[in-house]
Amino acid sequence: MSSLAVWYDVVVVLKAVAEIAGLALLGQGVLALLAGPSRETNVFYRVLAVMTSPVTKATRFVTPRFVVDAHIGLAAFALVVMAWIMCYVAKVYLVLRIASETLPG
Image (cartoon, rainbow, N blue to C red; front, side):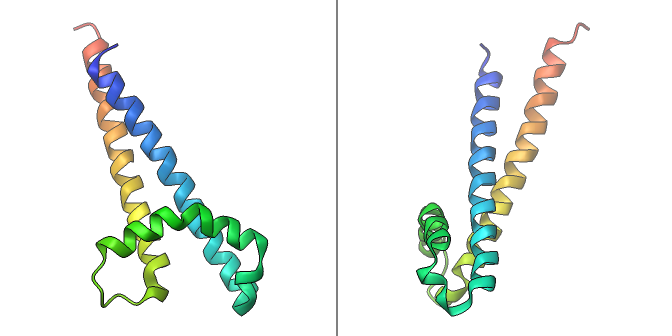
């Protein structure tokens, strides 16, 4: 297995993790809008909060202190989208590199 194939596998896994985190953040945001102030008692909201807690904690760590805690979810979603785009670009690049190495020519 070539090193490009290993990097391709790594990028695919990272892209899948970004997709799961992004969809969990999106679901948590939609549920927060629907449930309103009583969202903390909603079981599904708590499950999504547990799923997204590593992303929100990492976002709180990298953002400056003047960013309000209420905006951390939106900032986390933006960071996850950027990570997904970077993984997508890396995946396309690796596919093209692997294809150019395997084509006869």
